[in-house]
Structures are given as C-alpha cells and as structure tokens.
Amino acid sequence: MGTPGGFAYRVDERGTVTITHHGRPAGTLRGGAAARFLAAAEKGDPQLLMAKATGNYKHGNERQARDHARNRGR
Image 1 (tube, rainbow, N blue to C red):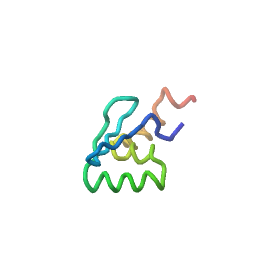
Image 2 (cartoon, rainbow, N blue to C red; image 1 turned 45 degrees about the vertical axis):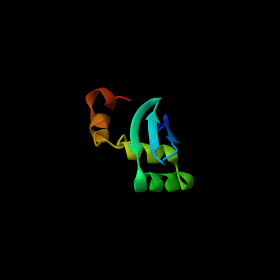
Image 3 (cartoon, one colour; image 1 turned 120 degrees about the vertical axis):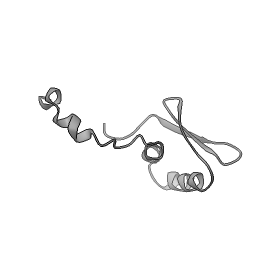
C-alpha cells in the first residue's frame, strides 16, 4: 500500500509514449517530455513516474481522509 500500481506504457514508432492505468488510457507524452520520461523510467521506478506524469499522485486530500471520523478507529 502507498505505492502506485496498475500503470503500463508503450512507445509507438514516432516516439509517442502512451500511458494506461488498468488498461484504460491515462495520458500521452510526446517530444521532449516522452524522451525525458523514457530516460527516467530506465533509471527509477516507472510506476511512480507514470503516476506523476498522469497527475494521479498526491491529490492533497490524504490528510483530510486520514482524519475523517470513519477512519479514526482504524
């Protein structure tokens, strides 16, 4: 728990990176952004990079959810 998952990516013949999340399209990177993503994906955690690239990362409501009354007893 706490680490992003379910992401995958593929690169087409033009160098465009298509990111999917659980099989559904989540984002597309082209040009320099695609090149930077591919270079970073080889060095680091591609799941985290894809979550950040698609905007599906740290929505800002994590603290509110943790402090909500229904979650306090856990």
